[in-house]
Length: 250
Image (cartoon, rainbow, N blue to C red; front, side):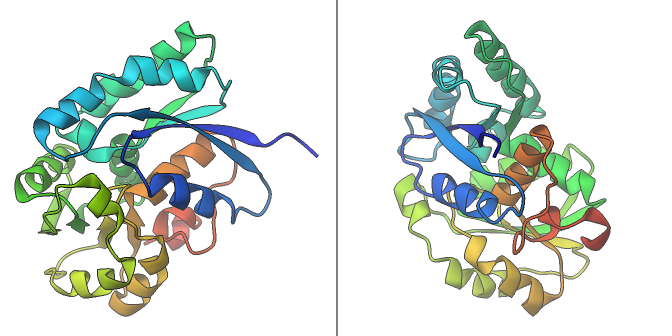
């Protein structure tokens, strides 16, 4: 039996979700095994100043995950990057990759911000509705970030939770009711959780069935890119539109 793929994660220090949802998703994969190795960047409150400070820690974090000789690295805080301005994930991914290479680990790098944008593009979407846990100004940053890639956000719901630990405590069973508050007219898909800290995995299939639209999340987009970077078929049961064969997603 081949060795498991090593997945490196850079997460907020207050993260409680990505290190559970990503292993849960990849643990469903039919033909591969994975281990997970994290470095943590300090973040307590989701506000612009704290997010900038978190991004400034990527050099240390990339070197730490490199020490585990990981096969891929994922920067798992979408809004930390999106709040830095248009196309910020490109610079962040390059910076992380360079830091890992300096530490002797030439692993490919993705980020949840970049993965969400690329996932929307992979599905051929031009109009999405989304749910975020963020305060409204940060949701506006994310809307602008996605719009910069030619995608129209038809509606966005902000749950306005600033404490990152509290974001991780949000109940995914309430997500279908939150989606009911969105104007879905004209939307081609639902970004059910535009944040890897807001739990959503348990609600993906229920929301797809209830609203008849493809569902993706920051976590499923990141999972797909991790699998693709490892050369593994990105198909996972119950993972929504991005973790099915793409011809079935739209």
